Length: 177
Image (cartoon, rainbow, N blue to C red; front, side, top):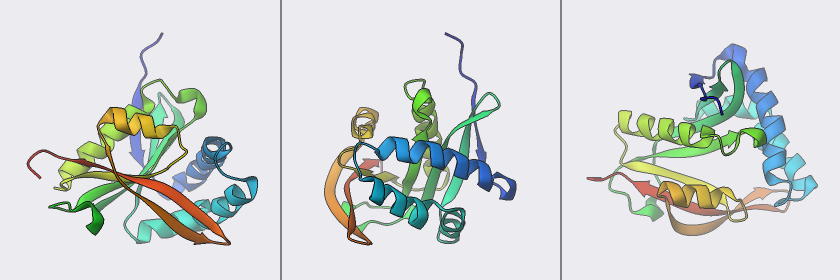
């Protein structure tokens, strides 16, 4: 098996269409067995249109593309200095808002590479740990647990149109935080 050559690039103006291409391939495949087709369509328009993605940068999200050699294979969005009072964190956190890799890239270390990057960015920002929301039916829960995240609580978020996001809120505090 050849050594993977992962690299990360912050999304720039010219990258939005590539990010959207990845979203369109990864997101529905990730949730096809968890959410209805109607909810996936709704969420793709509400949260994953280019307009919505760009708007998320105005409220603190920073998007990155993951490359394997020259090919984009995943994406990450983090929100530095995030606060979730229910976690009782002693310091602000970095929220991993989105972390997805192409299905054929799962199991290659791509997700770990993205998470390691998110942790490095959180430490660089001076945040006290990393948190994320994950759908309670998502197989990624075991990846996050393996990584060291603890399930802090469950929450249901009304996203409109009669749909809920039913998530675990997971937390990884840094030592000395």
